[in-house]
Length: 427
Image 1: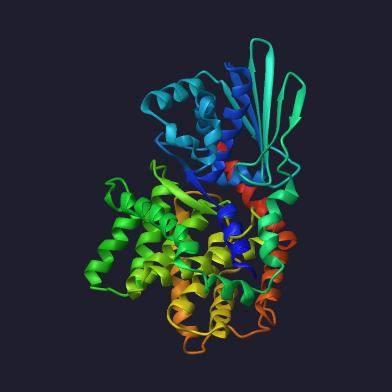
Image 2: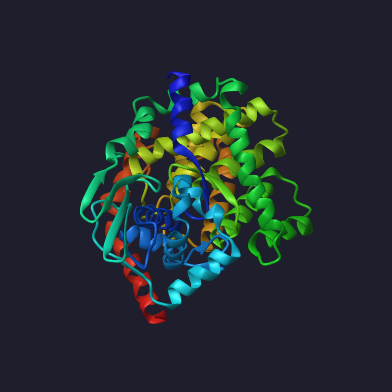
């Protein structure tokens, strides 16, 4: 595989996001629609069931609140910043948050979920003085595909093929080819991944410092009590702290991968924390980050952006496992064994939306990935041809895609129904 192609894919698949990408996408769509009007009286937002599931319980940065409605209200006030994409909530201020709360109290935001053309879908309709504008996000969280004003519709491109193109670049090669290419990158080529990983580390450190956070600081406290200095413990602490900070709405940026900030936390902090614990130099760390990032994106070729199961566990953690084996001097066969162990163990862990418990899931998956890597170095792991594990890693990834859709679509629908009922009871 060509190194230039791999780097281009990774750069395309990694982006800066403030807060969870689901409310971020809603905020962005509303802001883009309002930008067509300059002023706004009210908005109506329609989202897919998956966006609804992922966004109703997650903290929105800087607001002290959760859910998609507050994100939509923020978008009404942040129209001038829509070009910042998923970093739009960087511009949240106490005054904007106060005004957004007033908009909600006045009933100016309507939100519903419905059957949509794609599992990742947001349509925002804004109205003012008899005029209506709309914006549609589809296929990926910052992918604005349509903008309209009073019936004059402009297609913006960014179709499904464009959204999948980066992932498909990797799928044209074997996993081994991709890993070998990543492992041969120079520091000049892969150094940007170190910068991205450090952004996520800063988010973890913010979570550890914040007095309102519990999970990350308590994990750190347990490590001190146990006098446990194993790299695995740092992996668990840092991924857990960053996940909690993001899911509870701290105003911290995250480098997301494959459309997910939580994937980014698992991927970047899982590898960075392990590499630091092992004393790896910058070049070796950057190459390990490239391996993990490439595997994460590769798996998303099969399971796509929206999944019925926890993508951090089956995509990002699988990447961490492969990189961990490589970091510790293992062979490709041992990396494949570790990846199989992650998927064979965590493949059915369902996704019930973005929220505080994601920190528990992703930190558990990250530390298990490292543990499975250590076992693989001793040639211990889930063997080929067991359960959903295929005869090679590519077959396993294909099986994982089938397990997601159509395999777990009924499960996903049931989870949405449960969440929907709970939200109705709250109202």
